[in-house]
Amino acid sequence: MKFTHAAFFLLSACCASIAFGDDSRGRQIGGACEYQRIHGRATITDVRDADPNANNCKDAVEVEFTFSPDEPSAADDYRFADHRDTGQHLHVGAGLNPARAWARSKGLVKGAVHRCIRSEIVKGACTPVTFTFPDIDMEGWEKTCF
Image 1 (spheres, rainbow, N blue to C red):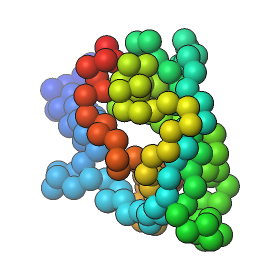
Image 2: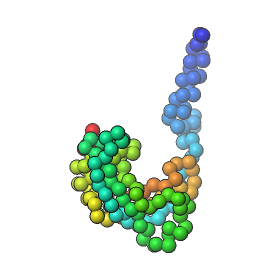
Image 3: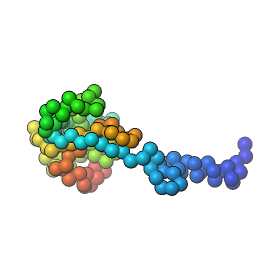
Image 4: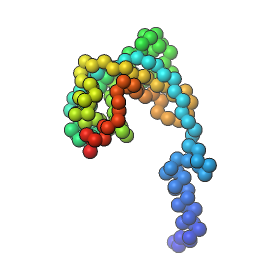
């Protein structure tokens, strides 16, 4: 089978558009996502050695936490009620278990309590539920990761 220059160019342009997630006008495919935010706190319930086969930084730990909304009745109005507040894991970067030294330096130790936000999607095609820690500076994790 012979590929012509035109066919190769067309295939390359198509793949580039898919890989970069945008169309020729520079817009993100699927549009921007919007979330409803539920403020609360996360209690670190466990910090343990990460499974060596997991997506890990070097010397990684699994940081498990439970989220509690500031307003307890907020849980009654969750859009994704099946997405539990218990047994959640804190990750860095592209879903990595953080390095032990980084986690410890951020106060991510068993029993610690941190401000946390449960975000539930209301528009777009992104992750339905995420948890963020506004009182933890997430910068610099990569310095201890690789």
